[in-house]
Image (cartoon, rainbow, N blue to C red; front, top):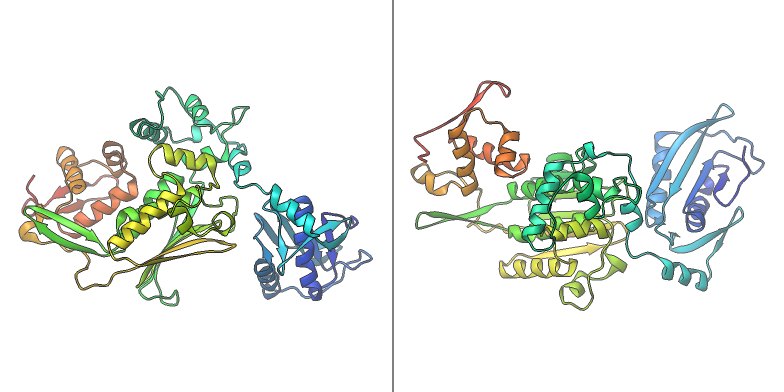
Length: 455
């Protein structure tokens, strides 16, 4: 058995749990990683004790509550040493300095000592203001793992915005132009998270009928690349808020209770500034009866109040430089400050209240919902159904008239929209009785109710 060192610590039992959290923080501050075992005596002999699920839960809760910020990697496992079960904890992270119970420690040989003021100052001065190291880290994915159609679409959008002047030739040259390849030609993390076909990112969505999570609600997990997740999240929120409908002449005007542009600003910024290296956390979109909550791992730069960005008192501070640059080029975001400014302005103009919270775990933005009697779920009016059909619905119906066997993937290519967006519109058309699906998913076809729709 190895001797204790700057990256290895043994503890006899959970009576030393607090000292263990301190050791983890000091090893992280010294070496960006550390390994600790419960069940090993000072003489390096195994000390048997009972380990249950509650034991592991207690250890996890103690670490997550008192070791800040949360390490990028936190493994808690039961392993066998000399035919006895012991608890192994492994931590890894470079977001130094890490604190334990509000104090900072460093490792000297196999001991933990409090940091001096000068040591702590050095840590903060050397601390990186972005996570470029994670973005630039190479992956083992190849060009076959990149969604070429999406890549071409984003380059086209960037050219149209005047933020890029580049004619697409092939995947390799395009990724090089966008700084998404390493010096030896490997796709980096930023490139794969933006354009990967293998669904690298997990987001969580939920809709609850009350203001707590205690009532049963619709809970959903979605995987995709950053662009797919942005479209999914925006559509999910839009589908679960209410609209006010007015007929002006022959045109129907649908006004959402929360401005869609404000929602998209916060959704887009959540992906631009998320701390992707934290594998144990996900971007979350939760709709309650009285609010819409958007959370992303990774707090705002040095706990700065977003109002200071919006007022222009402080320039934009970016966590993910490469990802944000692509989102900027194609028009999804401008700078973090202007995104907040537009959101605040839109909410104030439409009498939508909002608040936000920034802590060591991440950033949360909350829109308060408007339950005015003027807002309700949009329902079809059969007498004027053509006036009420949204323009994008009409595009879908036009393609179905051309080819009743057209599929959702084919509509995605023709209309240049995501599959979740197209599916949502098809579902609405079927719910309103305008569209019907006949037969199976593979061999079926679409039929249009001509009594409700005239092209």
